[in-house]
Amino acid sequence: MTSKFRPILFAAAASAALLCPSTAHALEFVTFGVGFIGQAGGNFLDKPDDQTIQGQAATPEYPGFAGLMTGVGGFIDIRFIDYVGIELDVYSASHKGSADFTVTNSSTLTSSSHDVEISNSALHIPLLIKGAIPGEIVTPVLFVGPEFVLPGDSEIAVTPAMGGGGANFGVVADLESYTVVTFGLGMEFNLPIPGDVVGVRIPLTLRGSVDPGSPNTREERSSIYDVQTDANGRVTAYTEDYKNRWKFQALATLGASVHF
Image (cartoon, rainbow, N blue to C red; front, side):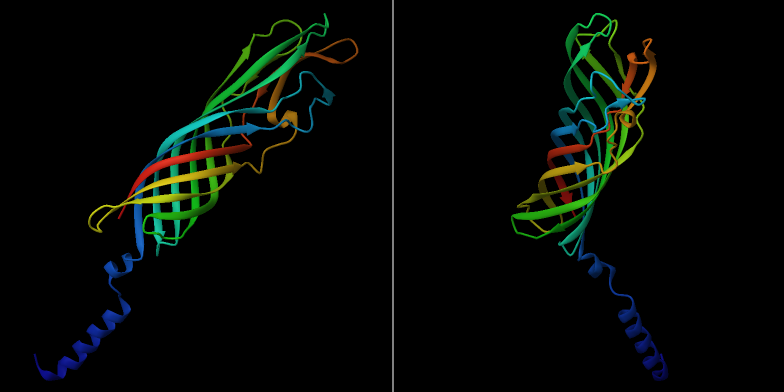
């Protein structure tokens, strides 16, 4: 190679080094994690403010429901310079909630007490923005973000079963998807693994979720049909399908993950 080309090659090499930083060096500031997660807690649906059905007061009132929620699934985690990150969870959950109410037979004016339990399955997909304070043994984290809920089958059980007069109850089997806001805090326990190729973490979190779009009227929370009225136009019997779109959730989660 002649000497007149050497300055040109040197300049080209120097420019490439400045304009195209090493990919390996850039990835030193990013970690990727995959893991599984299990959770348990409660879900709640408060009593609607407006209890009217087709403009009339009807009994029994639509009650508030509370019950157990459990779920299991997996997640991926991307962390930038160890302080901020994005976590995407996908897990299958089971929801249950129960309530007590009293039904009055409009013909005989006799009353009976009943327990109603509504339940459904759902696929949850939270997308969480995370902040962390890196620690050698424990890393505290905070997070917030939207959680997309895709409901599955729904069921209802009334004990003892209701019949004649009063009301019949069902539940909507195909609920529309909805979005809640999920937030919380937790700790990641960093297990001492020899070498620095991978890291193993045990994340423990407390989470809360709120559905900002939950309706506050009875007719928006349920479907009413087969309405029967007396000679004065008062509702005496109807079929009501509950839509168990949970307004509040409070959970504890525990998992394990591998980070690269």
